[in-house]
Amino acid sequence: MLQSSQVIMIELERGLAVNIDEEIIDVLHLAYGIYPKEFTADDLKAVHEIGKHIAEGGALHAIGQGGDMIALSRPDLNFVLKFAYDDQSPKGFSPKFSKRVEHGFSLGKENLGGILAPSMDIPLLSSEGESDNQVIYTAIVQEKVITVEHYLNSLESKARLKEEERLKKDFILITGAMWDRGIFDMDPSWEENYGVILVPRAPSIGLLDWGALYAKGQLVLIDIGHLSDNPEEFPEYEGIERQHLYEESLKSFFDPSNFKNRFGLLVNDDWMPTPGIVVPEP
Ligand SMILES: Nc1ncnc2c1ncn2[C@@H]1O[C@H](COP(=O)(O)OP(=O)(O)OP(=O)(O)O)[C@@H](O)[C@H]1O
Ligand SMILES: [Mg+2]
Image (cartoon, rainbow, N blue to C red; front, side, top):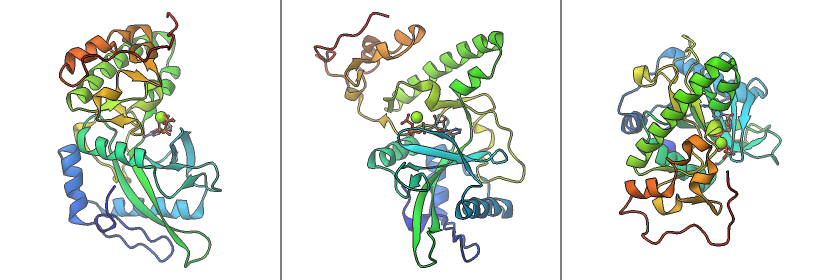
């Protein structure tokens, strides 16, 4: 995560105080190979707006939630704010991400340009009731997408079949590209964790203007919580041999022998599925 000197600070209560350090631009450059457009007055307005809505509570609503993250947005915004999901807290989220999520985010940010949905982390300074009781929340601002699951469900059957085929091919392509960069997505629930870029940008909100790198219809990763850079972890998940976690047409790609061919040097020669686990025949 960015250090506090590198970030955009938003003061929610005493008007807008924004401090954009040069370094944040470098981080974006490293991660995505491009410089974002300059932050315009509209961008700053959008940042302020995010803060204001959080401060007021309620204007942003949850559009999705998993074990680690809650994603908040509004129909007019082209991005989501992701916080650490916490069902014990009245807000539904807490200030800090777990180490695993932080690790995944830094792997994604450093290695997955063009694959991870455009994302950056910002701290949001929020007053919890009393003005002297301010809490810094880390949020990931991420391009809003429609998840593969919701996208396919929104299509009628003929279009659905066609898009399903295209997205499966793209999933294989980007998974291979991730492997080539030494990054492994451990979570097999790809229909929830990948999405399609299709939301036209609201012209007044340019906070995440990543130019032409990400095209409409492109499949991107949104969930950074299960990224690993250790190939030895990949061949099985929760004790189940990797390929059994995917539907029929993806099984051969995720077969340990295919993985091993690509990572012959990396995967232990005598790797075997955990003994004693019976995998049901498909
Ligand atoms: N960029 C986004 N655009 C649209 N919806 C999103 C976005 N990011 C997350 N969501 C929604 O929120 C859900 C949870 O997000 P994400 O998968 O990142 O969290 P998670 O807690 O890590 O999930 P898991 O339980 O799989 O670990 C997604 O499945 C999706 O429905
Ligand atoms: Mg998820």
